[in-house]
Image (tube, rainbow, N blue to C red; front, side, top):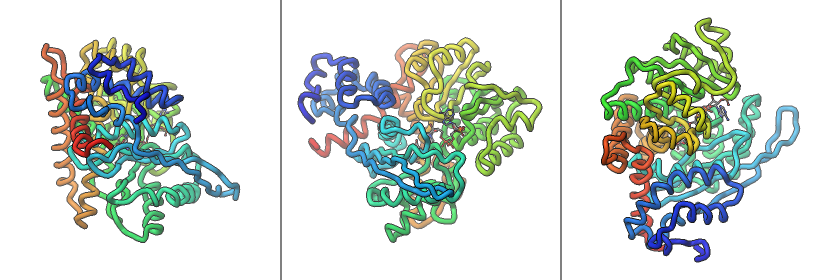
Length: 459
Ligand code: NDP
Ligand code: 2IT
């Protein structure tokens, strides 16, 4: 990297987080989400690297925050009325030091290069934490699947893959789902990949069971988030049973977080979408959750319809964090808990937060939770179960075998337990404060990647 932007020498001269961020922001103007994600990680890594010169001497932090490459492309497709539409597609191939690039695709109108860079950057450390050989990547488009017909979504996915296919492969880059990309989209994408590449390999994960998908992948992120929560609570001599829980979102991650939290004896009283949230003081039981699954996964309806169906529930605009609960599971999107909302949760007695979504808590919100000594499970640890089971799907595809649901769930549980232990190792406080899971996850995720980067020499 250009010496002008490389400040590795400065580590030994007490380079501050602020100095690092000035350089990063100068190199990446207009990318606030990327800046935010890097700042959160660097507040732990800069002090760590200062004490571990093998990393500072090789400029690792600057190299880690510069993607290997970003592919940006036009996606042209035809709507049902015959009109021609143009969207932008991206794949951010961030870092493949410990394995092929791996990470989801997001289709949402809010997608920008900044959003995909923040997600790809987080994915590097998340994937490292799983212990599986996966590098970090992310992709997507500003395409909005909402309100589109199945045929329109199919044509968009085929057009998107027509360009993307030349950049991915089972040993190169393995995309998967994220917001707006579920079983329907992955199927269209995989079908087009298979056609163009003339190969049947595990190049996408989150596939349906008929063509190489893994049992347990659909549930993995939500279940994993609750397994992580459970470990945090047990480590602090607490348990989920009997706790009241607020969940945001009502998509893939939220649905299975609600399912597992309820199974373990918690009472989930909220769910949301971009239109608002429902509050059901009686709790979302298995029957009500089946209604949400059908509403969201089949009918593609709005969460407000839950309150029309169940008289125990009310619908409100905004986000669910004003409801008094013991536990918060943000499972919708980034920056959905701001400082004021974190303070409200704290005032109302929240004990633990486990992030199902990526970067759902703004930085001042994280600081507020830490200051109040709330158990706080950061996304890269708490939601790693999804990509972990994607890694298991890759293993099954490579072996041309499929494992039972119990086998996959057993491995997921082991991986989440292991991630929790790594966070404790690097985040345990010397005082009787709770474990700093943010610091633990950042440092544990970093070490493996940094060691690999150093082993390869300067590149
Ligand atoms: P889905 O598309 O299945 O669901 C997303 C949910 O979040 C919907 O209820 C959606 O509401 C809501 N939502 C999305 N954007 C906004 C917004 N700007 N404001 C309010 N609500 C919003 O996505 P997933 O459940 O897969 O993903 C949710 C989060 O989990 C994301 O942060 C994703 O990156 C993360 N994640 C996902 C993994 C996976 O395996 N799927 C793995 C790890 C993390 P609406 O329908 O109104 O848009
Ligand atoms: O953010 C994430 O970890 C995901 N969207 C899942 C990625 C994957 O490759 O399964």
